[in-house]
Length: 518
Image 1 (cartoon, rainbow, N blue to C red):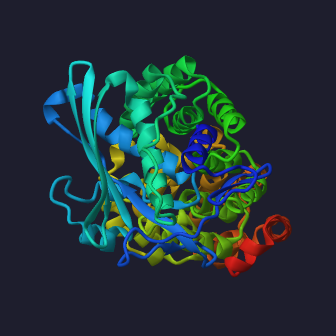
Image 2: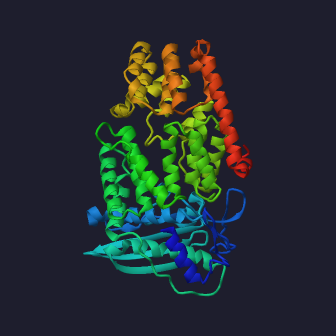
Image 3: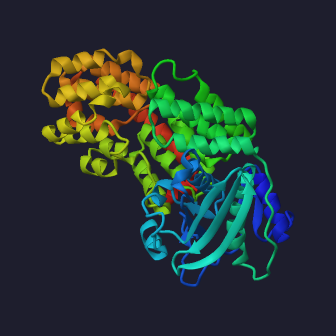
């Protein structure tokens, strides 16, 4: 879809590909917005890109308001906004706030200046949808939230089958409003180009709403809807990426029979084939690559994409994960800082990085307790707050089946029942191939004093792709393991892998390495 949008924008702006003033084609990489950017209002400040260049515009897309009485069609308001935001995020002229940031504000009574301050944005895209039969009446508005002025407002009355056309035109209008600030000449409103079938786009919006609740039932249904979407329109790269993410969740947490083996890998590879620089695919694919032992390759891949798009916080979020698996904890923290500089509400896995460094207070601060399960309870237990850890675990006992060995063994640790804790670890050994979970299981086995099991799990973690020397040397729970035969050999292998990963980081992106002070 990006190529069609670029062609249309160039036509609208009379911007020749051979001598561009606005959009430059970068061979084998994609596109770069090259015009100087003037913020939407003299009181508005465009954000700096990660290396200090002025230019990226920070924008938040609010869910489109809709009538609650519409029932099953309520998915349109959230889904359309999320889809527009995801498309804008692919252009490195924009930094798009995550949808969960928009959900923090009252949908009717928000104040533009308050949004500017709390969400740290320059522009707000908002609107409303009213469905009557098979037609949709839509209003869309772009607001400069520093001054509170309306940049533009449009009203649409369209058949429901034209939702993707609306999506495309709104994206073009946002880009055009940015471009026109650099050129006072007026141009006509661009027309949309439909590159995704109407029925497929409807399914895409439905699936996006379903996966908000990450239960096996909802994720299975979302997967099936995304699959139907890709069957209707095999060229819909974003749908392939979302399908891959659903499949991956089900592979890890959905239980036997809830997924087709290898479905996530196939879906992501199709997304990359259709759009090699699709940021949402690169971010979501990173845990898969790390879990199969390719964390260094994942890190290099993300660095290469970041060299072409440094305005996407999700890409830096993926780098947080990959660098931690490679034992590059300083780089992992720096990547998190870049993510929250772009979007201070960005969600990354940095809590696990802080946990590896032994800073349990920071781990608790950054851990998502709404969807989290293990790490905050482990952090409390690690600081001796056993009663608090036990209470937290008790409140989640119905979810232990997602990670039974990990959760039950931690519960038995805080209950001072090492024998049952070790039994819980042995009962779940064959179920996990996630290397970071194997590392946590090794940590708990060591704390119980079963150094043989701890070494077995540690070797599995390293062999599966997680190597991190810092907790092995600093974490008191690993102290019993340090004198065990074979420990030093594993530690030496881990340190060598970390050195190789550090070299790969610098070779892949020397400028980013300097920018991250790494």
